[in-house]
Length: 288
Image 1 (cartoon, one colour):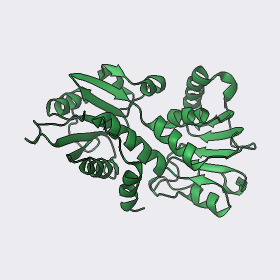
Image 2 (tube, helix red, strand yellow):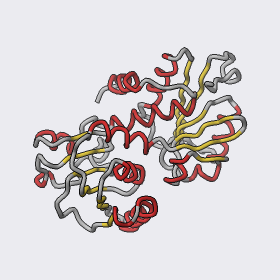
Image 3 (cartoon, rainbow, N blue to C red):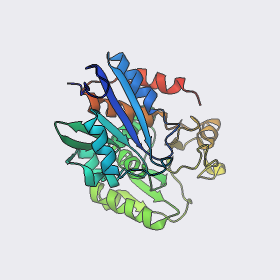
C-alpha cells in the first residue's frame, strides 16, 4: 500500500519524498520520482535538503524527525550521511545490513527502515549491459562512495577475481576486507598500481565527472577485448567510456545504476512497481 500523506499538503493523494545530502542541486532523482509518482496517480513532491548550503544545518536526526512528522513516505540519503544515518534507524534491509550503508529510508508505522538500492542498481545494470563479457579478472578503481556496492555487484555477477585499487590504501584495505568476509578471500585482492592484464576496468571514483575531469586509467592500455564500466553519469559518457567505445570495447556509463537504484527506492517508498523504461526516459530527458 503506498505511503501517502494527508498532513503535509492537505490531500490524501500526496506522496512526499526528499533527499538529504550535500552538493545535490543537480540531482536527477526529484524529476524521476515525481514523474513516476504522477504516472501512478499521485501528486508527488520531492524536496532537496542540501545541508551543505544551509547556514546552520540541523542535526541529521532532526531532519528525519521533521520529515517523518510532516507525513513523508521516506527519504533518499547520500554523501555524507549514508553511514551516519545508521544510528538513527530501527531496522535495515538485507542489502543495507550487508553493506553497512543506507541510501533509502522508509517511514512506516512509526519506524524508520533503511535500505540500500545502490547494490541492486549497479548489479542489475551490469547484468543487462555486460551480458556475456569475460570476467575472470576485473580491476575496480576506487573504494569510497559507492565502491563497496559496486564490488558486491561485480562478484554477484560472477566476476571470478576482483582486484581493487585506491590511492587511499587504508580505504582499499577496508573494502577488500568487507568483500572477503562476504564472498571469500580467494575472490578479491588489493593491488598497489594499475599494471596487469584485466578482462574489465570499473571506475568507482569521481574522476571523469564534470567536477573532476580526466580518466582514472591510462587510455593507451585499453584494448577492444576489455570491457569498461563507469558509475558516473555527469556527463552521461565520461572520457573513459568514450575512449573505450572508440576502441571497440563494451562500455557502460552510470545511467543504468542511477535509474536502477531510483526504481528500487520508489518501490520501497510506495510498495508499487516502478517502470524502469519510463524512469530512464525521464532521466535521459534531462540531457547530458
